[in-house]
Image (cartoon, rainbow, N blue to C red):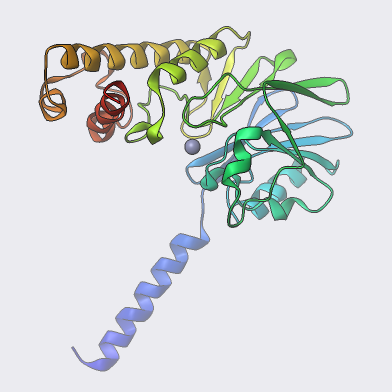
Length: 274
Ligand SMILES: [Zn+2]
């Protein structure tokens, strides 16, 4: 290939790559009075705005966080008082520096073992539950026990009927890959605690927002998955045989079922045969 043509092609490729990087998907969805959901590409974070204060969850990344602050500032100039981590995974909680030095970072204590890279350490941690107040509006932070990780919490705004939880639940979507090395029975118990909370709107960290019924559906999937794998183990099947034969026909239209169902089986099989 002549050198000049190659240079032109390389320049075009670099331009295309930059164009993709330069246009992230950024959205803000109002879920209820005072309660919003910020989206940067595939990641979503809840934030709560009252007259005199703002609570933001999950700064996401060094790339996303400045956009997040910018979107918040289009709605309110009140101080961002709290930054709450949904759990410790770096793709959700890096980039907190964009929120400045005055913000108080709060997380479940399970986050402390995983502070690295661009994750700022929390100023305050809690073990089971705590409540924060923005003016008179209560925001509850609840640890329902281990689920996707040992630090995933529920952010609940009782007066607005909204609950936010990241990666441990979603709207008609199967769990990610082989379920992060977590215990499916513990995960199920955490979701049952979530299901006992009073709310209407489910806000996940990925994918569409939903309703409380979606938590019940997710519990149904987890129970069916655990039962199918346990049944295979009881019949003496190998993991490969189960991945070949097990199908949960009720859930085949869920997001990622085709790509991740075999890995979900692997994750549950690993835990049940430990
Ligand atoms: Zn996660």
